[in-house]
Length: 159
Image (cartoon, rainbow, N blue to C red; front, side):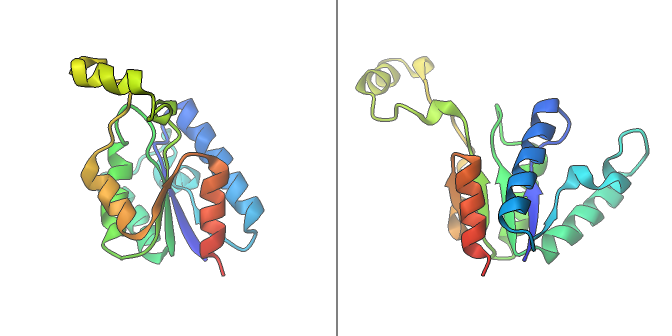
């Protein structure tokens, strides 16, 4: 099984999450061929140079070869590169497992939060994700909230 891990890769937090998720997936599924863009120094060594065409070619090639996309959709907004990877991969009609760990998902049944939002739209204590991107994920996959759930979803696809 080949898989592609999509997330931002420029902040220490993103790189840490990528390393953690890749390590957990590889430990759970030793035979998996996992492409993690930050591990591709040919295009992501920021002391070197790779132009936009080289980056697009490398990542699209790996997306096309992958059986599953694991996409981290955390952050203030979904990372623009991740959103593009989700869009491109969705055209292949293959599974997408999205990790959305934001704690603002909690308390969805808390009536005080709901009432506050109804009374004043600026009191939104929840988080918004782009619904087009969410729909692309849900067409062939799932959105989970923990690393463990993401690993289990990928393991279930690995036969």
